[in-house]
Length: 178
Image (cartoon, rainbow, N blue to C red; front, side):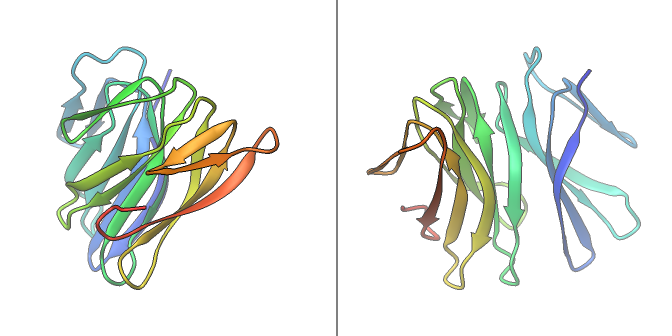
């Protein structure tokens, strides 16, 4: 049995944001109910927005119908919001389908102030690529750090692992360029 798994929590003003993933085909919080279309045994990432009293304001979902899992979120004082995780098979973000190597490719998302998606970037790898941390720099760019096996591609740059698992730090501009 799967359940919603919070992975990160951030507070901006009176709004609490919970970021995570779920393996359920239905999420119910108070009177809010979201049913994933055509999902069987897969996961999706979510951002839940709650007011200071703990009441749900809204919920945004992305990265379905196949595997995705949220690993990190960063909202600096500039209130730019980035999130990231990994996915297997094909994954849909904002209507665009991304194809994975089947072993786990990384994604990074820049969110709009209302929690929508401004842009999505993903890596490709015949091995796996699992992001572990995200941090926003003063210019609004973002660093993504994680581990990978075999090779992994960020934009036009290819990294080759020299061990069973290597680490990486990738930088994306505020416009999503590596």
